Image (cartoon, rainbow, N blue to C red; front, side, top):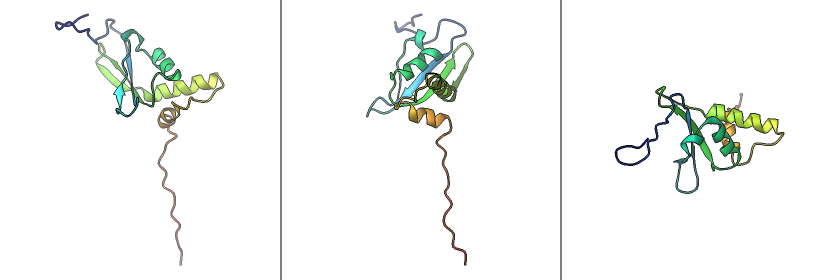
Length: 120
């Protein structure tokens, strides 16, 4: 589908098509949303792209469905799937995904350490 200006539309053609996008930090330019083929923007291709290192320093994964009129953060489910697949393959999470998986699996929790107290 093309718009009146000749640029391709980002609206998926099928009615029930969830689109996953990855926000990552490719370098010193800051955070960016990764460009991806609209047919390869599903859950499986995004997980595979993450495992193969296509995205450097992933920050979050967002899923949206134009036909359904919704959008949500899918980072937790993607992190769990990355962990599950690595566990099935008996391998560690790749180093470039470790922070992402730890963040969304709840391993980064701020903990207040008790201060030493003096009792008189």
